[in-house]
Structure formats: structure tokens, C-alpha cells
Amino acid sequence: MPELPEVEALTAILAERAAGREIARVLPVAVSVLKTYDPPLSALEGRTVTAAARHGKFLDLATDGPHLVVHLAKAGWLRWRDGLPEAPPRPGKGPLALRLLLAGPERSGFDLTEAGTRKGLAVYVVRDPREVPGIARLGPDPLDDSFTLEAFAGLLRGVRHRIKGVLRDQGVIAGIGNAYSDEILHAAQMSPYRLASDLTEAEIAGVYEAMGTTLRSAVERSRGLAATDLKGEKRGGMRVHGRTGQPCPVCGDTVREVSFRDSSLQYCPTCQTGGKPLADRRLSRLLK
Image (cartoon, rainbow, N blue to C red; front, side, top):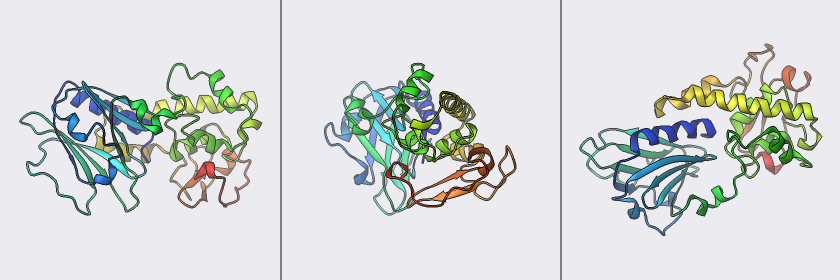
């Protein structure tokens, strides 16, 4: 799933290539991805893109009228294209969900695609991004200057949930998903099963520092990359996530996995759990 660093990079691509340009056509292919009807998609046509922004894992393409807000879900992606075909796309079984064409002879724009059969890609046309329910409930952004150590500690106070689930909860902190929560906890040398309410001040500070370092490093690595290269950069930058059975780059121990119904977490026993493997069983609903 695209998380904060990848969505931040896609936002930068849209800001660079689309800002100041007029939207010529918005062509829905998979109608099910559109979650709003007023304003209609056609309200974007003829509008000028004024900015691109990120809200957690949401992309926000602002115009001098409505906003086009996108959540890429688990398998969605944005593909920037020059020379889009003149023929409109046809609905079918392919991954294409929506196409946006900018005005101009170069026929540039982007496709929203989604792989697999479990569809979660969501598109909203709204007058204000806060009209999107997922944005309205977002917690603070971990890269915002106002997200201080004191603010983070306050979010954890009295929360009797495992720290892995807390980091992933978009209503607590915006933008962190399964992959980067694994990486943050590895960098902090913290078990994903630790209860947030049990963390000492020093441990909270360690997770906070690891969060900032991990996310800022990922954003910096993704800066300037083409959209087609972002997924590979994400995979290549992981130290434990997605690396089950491989040696930990810090201590050399074997990276272990705990599987759930629709996801899994990876960790290093030596670095994070005192050498003890975690029970491979389903966690609370916070980890789903």
C-alpha cells in the first residue's frame, strides 16, 4: 500500500507537472471508484490546477473549483503519461480506473490504476477536502512541525493497544501503514506487541525519533523519482518489512514474520524482542 513517503512523492510530481494547467477531460473507467456525485467529475473539466497536496495517504489535486481527492488503497497507483491515446478508454477487466487529460497538444496527464480483484481505490470530487470522511478523521501528520515529542507522548497516554496498531491507526497519526510501522519499530528496537501505555519516556522518545528519521529518509530517497520507480525504491529501502527469512542488516539475525488475515508484520528478534520469537497468531482488530 502506498504510504506517506510515496504519496508525498506523487504529490510533488503532480505539483510540478500539473499545477497551472487546465484539465481537459476526466474519464472514469471503473465507475465504482467514484465515491461522490456532487459536484460531478465533469465539474473538473475546464478548471485550472492550482496545487497538489497530501493529507495522510490521500492525494489532493486542487483546482480553481473543486478538488479531486484520491486514496490509492492497497493496490492503486498513479501513472503519469505523456502522449495519452486520443481514443477514450473502454471499461473492462484491466487495471485502469480513471484517466485525467490536461489541455495541450502533448496530451499529458495521468492514469489511476488498481491491480488485483479486491478493489479499494477511491476517488472523490469535493469542494473542500475535509468533506472526505477519511480526511476528516485523520490524526496529526508526523512530518508537521507541530507534531512534537510532547504531542506524540500525549497521543499514547493511557492507550492500551499494541504500538504497531497505534502507529497504523490513521485517526491517531496520519500516513503510516504496515510497512513503515515495521521499519519505525525496528529502528526504535521495539517489539510491535508492546502496549503503548506501558512505554517509558525514553522509549516514547526512541519511537518518536525513529518515526521522524525513517519517514524523512524515505521521503528524501523518493524525491525526484518518476512514479514508475517509487515502488522499487520503497522495497529497496526496507530493512525488515517484506524481508522474512533474510538477515537483519543491523545484527544478522533472521527476520521473522507474524501473519494475519490480510497482512503480516516483520521484525528482528534480536533487535526488537530480546531474541524471543513472537507468537504467530492474529492480533487485535487494530492490526487488521
